[in-house]
Image (cartoon, rainbow, N blue to C red; front, side, top):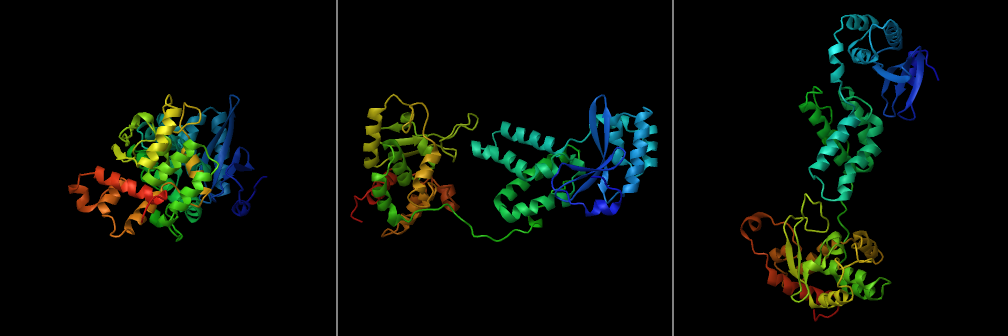
Length: 418
């Protein structure tokens, strides 16, 4: 494919971000799905191919780009410049005459070592720094910035130098993401903004071109909270679990998740040395950020609770059969069950999530006569406190929580007069 006129370039609609069309000797135009088109020069030096950006189309017409291509070829052939010095001079030149003057004045030689990195290089450097500082608490969160970038942004701006990225380019590929996956788009936009802010602080760019979230059209969608089971169905769930085709460790872990409201990762990673089988006190330690441990308290503090006797009976039986193991729930004795196993198994009963069991408990507590005091309910599920409670109420109500756990377990497992 070769273009001979501006009209042909204008009508061209690239199907991907790696499409180039020839426009003359050494001159090509590269197109992007987002609509951007840029003239580039191709030079082969010492058996290596170089692509040099000239200018965006239609800011520069084809005739001017051809003149610059001819002048560039002549300068390289006469050895009046190197490919690298030409790379620096091209974006600063709006005509063949200005390019030759700049090269012959040797005012670009000192600038070759200060080239602006591509967005891909800057993004990955920023990401590496965030990982090193333990910004994300689990593997899934840690992978997300790279995954969403590679899916939605890399093909559009990854190869562009930071100082060549304009606000309309970002808007053109981000708007469809906001339309389809708003939450992912919000996260990705925040990551992109941080990368440009770092570049601005390092004086690599003159300003941050990343638009704010308010610049996008965001569709209104129903907010979907974690699916929860109505408390009236808890006895039904426990009856179903009794005959479900799961191993005993899995069944016990699922009951523990439903009654305590702990996250699936906390339950699946339960260690025997965190549980006192005599007293029934299960203490989940605070998470060590630097050690990147999983299955511990996300809140940043340890949390102790006394388990109901019905659950302790099952846990003691498990321990008697596998006391040599580190984890309470394990298939091979060396590593814990996967938290996703619990989630998938609950889904076989109803469209519920393990996190939703906190709402199940809160709804049950609200429907008691009289309703259970809100502060105690929040303490039971270790939710963050607000208002005056946050500043003045320090008691975690351990004994009251233990009594409440027995009462809740009795209701759920069919041994209640309520």
